[in-house]
Length: 148
Image (cartoon, rainbow, N blue to C red; front, top):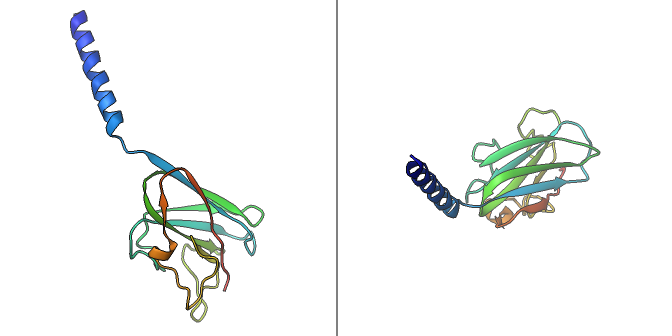
């Protein structure tokens, strides 16, 4: 009986070590936002991981999404368990909390921001290639929110 228990324990241990050896490491991505126009509403953090997914005005092509309250015109959100890869961030200052980009005639009337962008305009439109970065370790990014 003891031999059977030892044999089963050995098999489970070997299987566990094998599974650990082949597991893919994951990382966290913390996003900091400061200098918001006001503390009204929520911030919507949208994460993309594929070429061609930005622009995404209707939020249909994202990888992950989260929301955060605003404290003192600033907010932070952390995406956890992300595999190594290329990512881009889009943030919406959703003042009326309807989870969509509200627009005036053409331009957004709520604040928006993208990773790697300090400003946004007709000649500086975000896309995945320009907004993306490589995630290879736990990372913190600061994103600027632009009000048009």
